[in-house]
Length: 384
Ligand code: GRG
Image (tube, rainbow, N blue to C red):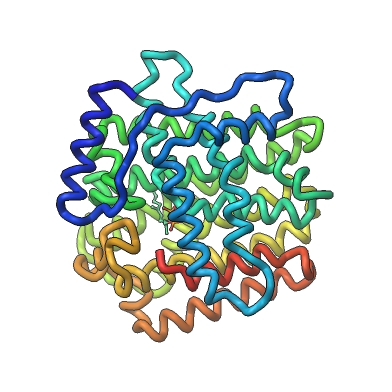
């Protein structure tokens, strides 16, 4: 990070801490360099970069652990420790995420690289990549193998998710200045960089799946299937389509009534599509057959919708500090949400119904499905 942008980021962040919106101190220190050793195995190589973690990253990891420990308490009474499970995935995920945005042609690519890293490492919960890895584990021969085959896709999904947040926060879209507890990308880097940084993340995500999925472990036809599915879930039959209908339903091109069917269509595409991709692609990479992939898709569509119902509920029940983004935004904008159409209790009941239906789809997988089942419970019990 150069001196100009360090000062810029620090001053923007300071102006936010001044308003009490940000409770974290931030050490916007330089990115660690990626260990370059052809001798080390890939996993050890990735983990070695963790030793280089900045104070900010260590802080984020502690925060995430607390978040999962707290929220996972309300999940079943069984012995599976979701917090430990999620935390065990963080080092390798974060190391590869950083690798995806390393500046490749310094100094020319430094700024865009920094902009991408800023949002990527700002403290997301990593729900999509963890779902992807957990789905791969259900079918692969071991946890290690699941990680090896699914990590590039898991990382790609987080990159796509992050870029969708960067674009969603732009003034022409949802117009928000706070995300993951920090000033949004366009506030720090300007709209031009927020758009281009998002574009960079999106395109690199496909490159990553194609280049980094080990072809000696996964049949190339499966890798192609994954790329096609991820492409579909991003386009007009996915995030883009969902976002456009969302904007239309907000009345940006004329007032219109929004029905429960509209809301379901928006969230099936805007939110659930990426979760469906995460679980289905993890299953494909782990070696699942058609029937198993379909069961995974059914599970993920329901938890994807439940995720959005929970998000709508949190908009009215949680604080800005807990959410890391502006609370009550939908309420103030009088946006059509699940609580608005169903009432708060009705929305809670719907989230529970969707989660129960999701869990039924995984019954054939028995014990192997435990991490995904715990994630399903977490999704509707989370506080952020
Ligand atoms: C993908 C090409 C392309 C464009 C993006 C802007 C847009 C089109 C779509 C908007 C998608 C969007 C912002 C959906 C909301 C999904 C959602 C509920 C996000 C919150 O996810 P969390 O809680 O966030 O997992 P963290 O920060 O924890 O990762």
